[in-house]
Image (cartoon, rainbow over all chains, first blue to last red; front, side):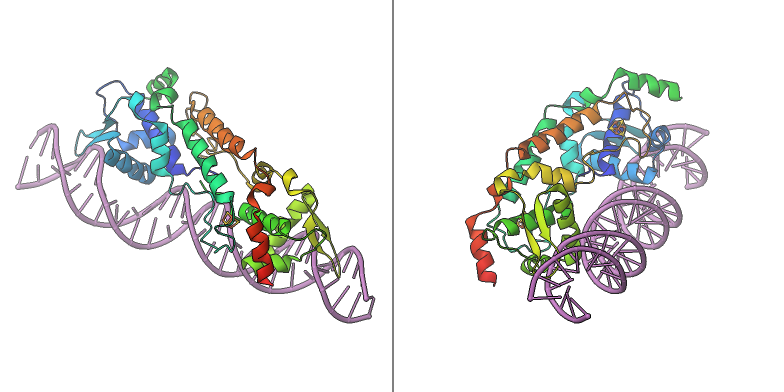
Length: 141
Length: 141
DNA sequence: ACTAAAGATGCATAATAAATGCATGTTTTG
DNA sequence: CAAAACATGCATTTATTATGCATCTTTAGT
Ligand code: SF4
Ligand code: SF4
């Protein structure tokens, strides 16, 4: 029961962006340098965030990335929902199971996943971006 | 965010065993025939259940498997805990993350997993073993 | 207009983990 | 002692994830 790295990379990127002074743009390279992760992933993750409207990207020379919304308005739940490919803990149809329809397990697991997601619902990017991160960012330069 | 097939195979096996008349023994082969899954997996899964004391196995000719406890005493939560290799949604140390210690995300995700597990806690094998399954089992022969 | 910076996208490969299969050993009944 | 059935280890396959590479598009600055 793990989340994919894409999901974490999305969080890392958002946290990094949230740690910037207002109006500042950063490049994908900056993010990758900071975390020592692959630009290929970050690039794709950022694209998804741009499409969703969480991040603003400016192409071309002098361009870069910035948050398109206040951190308080970026829900952790939305990010998990976006980047997790499957939220169904068991796929009964994959190895077709003979007792489908007579098994309450699917339902129980489904509500357990709901409980997982519900418990993320109250939190936003602002809750996971401490001022220490901003300091760290400055030290990095 | 999927559970492993081992976990589901454990559930399938337990449900099958719970559907037997009292005192009846079944072989691993029976379980595999019923669900059309691989004996190799089931064999290993059953072993874990035997070690944990949920299933009783008798070796040798005429042997087989049976539940070692009442279905009401087999917690779904315990099964998930046993068969899921990792219950940590993100491993911050894998791609060492620079903001470890300054990131509240781990904690939030941790409590989300707790919520997931907590919501399984009230249920037992008895809750997912309907009488229809027993009927189906009889029809299978 | 040209060039370089920087994002956007697609495809190929590598790494990892899960799932499956095969072979062999051990126990027990008849 | 032979056959049934569990027990265990190892090899192979498959699926998914992660990574890398190549190329295209956009835009600022000269
Ligand atoms: S045992 Fe229940 S949850 Fe598992 S595959 Fe069968 S129907 Fe689905
Ligand atoms: S961003 Fe937070 S949760 Fe993700 S790896 Fe870094 S410290 Fe861990």
